[in-house]
Image (cartoon, rainbow, N blue to C red; front, side):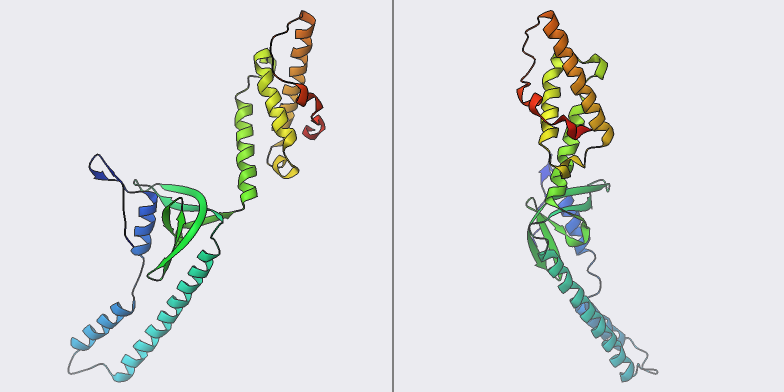
Length: 235
């Protein structure tokens, strides 16, 4: 497997993918060739006055054969598990160039199997299946991200008592987004956030009523859809 790393200012930059591949390649352990080399070395340098018995050699080889079978079985299971991840959304836990933990999120496009190890392709980069942290349902992550964006937008609003006509459009948009969420997506919104949203909606009504009394006809945003929205969902 060719390893390619980007270069910046004349220095090789180690990516999270490169770190994952290097970690996997360095964890190969003892293979069949290494065992045979050790066996030959043991025979070559054994004490000629007390040579190792044939029975002991056969026992060692039998133990190695069992270990090799277990390794092959483990590799086969890794490949099967990796193949089932194609098309799934996953989190990969790896490290950056400083050795700090970092999470990579994306969809598994395909699987590469080489030297008894499975590698997942995510966003055109390969990661060892050993670094797989979490498999995520697409609907779950979409709902989670939508709720996170919603909360961030809420946080940008001023205190309820400080709301004026310049905030009405943002409040209308948040009300519309919440009312268009399905029940599953709404379950990701904390109750105190929903309570705060209703406070903003009521405050927006007060601001509009005050503007009507003062005859203020400034453009304060499209409220037609918001008036028809189901506000009961926020209770």
